[in-house]
Length: 241
Image 1 (cartoon, rainbow, N blue to C red):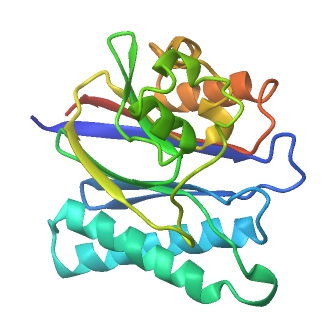
Image 2 (image 1 turned 30 degrees about the vertical axis):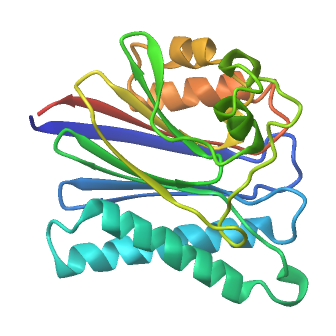
């Protein structure tokens, strides 16, 4: 099944004095690469960490496509995250000591989505009126859900929702997921300033039936009044070729 993709990405500081989120979108032939990163709040130089991570990830992906028209997508994104982690750690000296960031990257090609995530920036898909998770947060709340301590319904609005357990620049992990995507899917990469502020039902309502530009704008407009964080959304819509 051949598919085509349209995208729109938006990032704002919101109520914060500085935007520590970073995003990137690039085409490599018929493959679309997207990334979002969220500099860790309360740590120094979060904006530098997120920018560094995204830039390194971009470079790794670009080099992979320069060497091979169809590289191994999971291996490429895993390497992108590992090198981003190494670069942020190498640069975390002086006033930047302790800096870190989340990172979620994605490759879209021919009806398939490959995603890699570190931290709690997410990839989700709106399909048939439902919000389908693609990534799994590296967070304390997710660990409590997995352990049966809290129910999934208790996650939204949880007081410990901002505590992440893995990041670029600290305790590193990267999970890769491959999943098919279909025409009329709306894929969302987001930082927690969006998905922690809007319920899954609200996210579905804001994007359903909209093109990529309108969907990203609607999510941002809905999140700004209720979010206390930087907000970044990258929306990719899927259609038939």
